[in-house]
Structure formats: structure tokens, C-alpha cells
Image 1 (cartoon, rainbow, N blue to C red):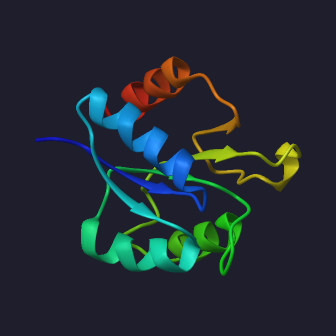
Image 2: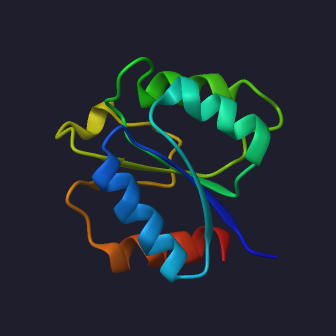
Length: 117
């Protein structure tokens, strides 16, 4: 069965780029522009992994992460933070990893494969 990745980012170019990278490597994708929208998508799609930007309108990544961490059905979904924020300390402690934009797509795919196959 094809693994699904939820891409959460407010930059349409980044979303398109990530979707392309994942699709080219055999992954299905779903997308959201901020944490509030991501939570709604999450309830419908149940992805195997989430890539999460930190700074977004409406609901930032850390708030979204705290919200899903409290939900039994979502708390074990691995999260990869991909952010332009320079401060790693603003990231999410329980994330699989943190990648700064711009990131190496080959490194990202390696991390995804090691995390969900």
C-alpha cells in the first residue's frame, strides 16, 4: 500500500516542490496551508508522515503539533519539520528531524524512507 505524506506549508512553491519530490518517489500526498487546515485534512486523510513548516498564518506549526500530540489517533504520526526559521530551538522536540530551507531533497527522501519505508 502506498504511504501518504501530509505537507503543511503556507508557501505554494514549497508545497508544489515537496509534492513533486514525494510523488516522484512513490508517495501519495495531501496538503494544507496552515495548522488549522492541516488538522481538518488530518482527520480525513490519516497520513503516515507529516512535513511541517513552523511559521504560518492562522496556526503555527508548534501549536498544530501540540494539538495532534494530545489526540490518541494522531500522536504517533512522525513529523519532519521543514522551516525557514533559523532558530532550531523554536522547533518541535519530538520531531523526527529538522531541515532548514533550502533543504537537500535527497536527504529528505532518505529520512522519509528510513521513517516510513
